[in-house]
Structure formats: structure tokens, C-alpha cells
Length: 233
Image (cartoon, rainbow, N blue to C red; front, top):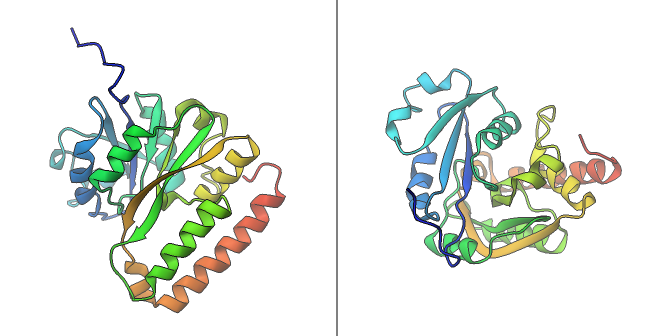
């Protein structure tokens, strides 16, 4: 018989992490998630067929749950949520890192119904100008109300289903579309005021100016579209 949970203990989370082909960064994230509240689960969602890949094996993290879903971040996240056992969801990218202090902050400030919580994005590497991207992400999420998926989303599973989940028909921007639907539905966007770390490898690989300009242009186009659409799907 399991022990009753103390009122002071944070409730368990269902953490969903979609994996891209050949993805390996999730292994470092798993070490961070050892500090999750007791009883939490981590659901790793591989694209259909990738569980046999040498870089994605069930045996590497035996305490975690592995499932397959059609390829695509939206489809994989939706499948992970469908498999979740707990009411509170935490949706993360595979290349994210969560410092222990951020997990403590999350446990102390869990979102309630009609709230979507997110972390503050910080980069662990990359060109010297990445501080501008960190500032830009802070302004975009805190001032403009547009947090993105690489900041992690924490919300009640009932609210996720009420929003219709992620749209698998979108080639990109499924996280952006979900946030706009959340805003239209009256969900409060809640800053956890704690960092989530990610790599700036795309900026180093493709160039800071090129990558930053591409992201700004795409964000602007998506914002115009999703703001205009009654239901941005």
C-alpha cells in the first residue's frame, strides 16, 4: 500500500520529451530530471521506427517510458500527452537542460487550472551575441506574451485537451499556435522566473546574423497569421 502524499509535497509531473532522429542530447536532460517530484514520470517519444536506432534504445534509461508516434514534434508531443498518467504536464525539448534550482522553483510555483507556465530561455554556448537572443526571448515571452516550446510548457492536461493539443498539420510553429490558442481561451501565461538552458549550435553552425534574422522573420509571420486566425490551426 502506497503512503499518502503529504500536503507539503508537490504533485508528480508527467514530463513529455519528443526525440528527433539520432537525437542524443536527451541523455543529459535525464540526469537533470532525477530531481523531479516523487512519483513523476518521463515519457520519451521517438518517431515511429526509431526505437531500434542505436542511439535510441529502451535499455539506456530503464526507469523511463518509451513510446513511438508518427514523426513530427506536434504528433510526438500529442502522443506523449495521451500516454501521460498524471494531471500536470511538463513538455520539454530534448536538448533542454534544467538546473536543480529551476526544478525547485517549478515545484514551489506549479501552475493551476487555466494557467500555462514557462521558463526563461538561456543559451549555454554559441556566438558572443547570444545574450541579445536571451534578452529577446525574455521580451517576447514576458512583454509580448509569446513563450515558445524551447522554454518548456507546464500546464494541466485538461487545459491541454481543451486547447486541442498541438496541430500536426503545421510544418513549424506548433508551439506558437498553441500559445495563441491559450491566450484566446483565457489561459494565464505564467513566468516561472527560472532558467531553462539550451544549446545555440544552430547559431554557431549557420551564423548568428542569418539564424537570428530567420527566426525573427518566421516569428513575425507566424504572429501575424495566428493573431488573425480565429483558431490558428
